[in-house]
Length: 141
Image (cartoon, rainbow, N blue to C red):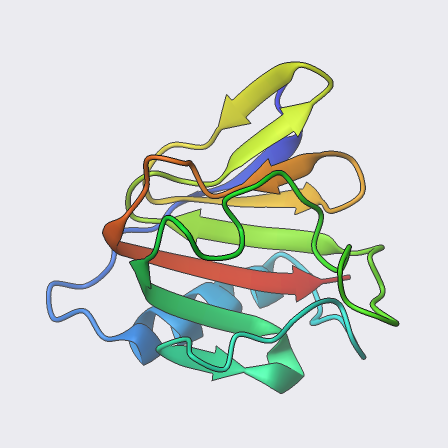
């Protein structure tokens, strides 16, 4: 059984804009009753193409294989004062996030919007992911 729950497949519009994807995915998470995490849940990606700190949501356009996130981690594990007890909502158009429980590795499908308990497993961006990769993350209750 996978550690995440699928909220469905989201395919982005042909005239892709980061803010369109961010707003659409936040609307979906709200429809499922997920609320943005209050306070600090981990590092904020100020370089994201679109981000809303008060919603704990961001959309990234590019993927640097050497950037943070390529090793197994839990959000907030290296942020002082972070609340690590939250749900992560993740989406990527290709090379989706990988999840590890024990020695088992799971991976969502491309364009699949998933929610996972941050403390139930570790996750990472796939090591072979690089270049143009559109992704979304939101920390929720």
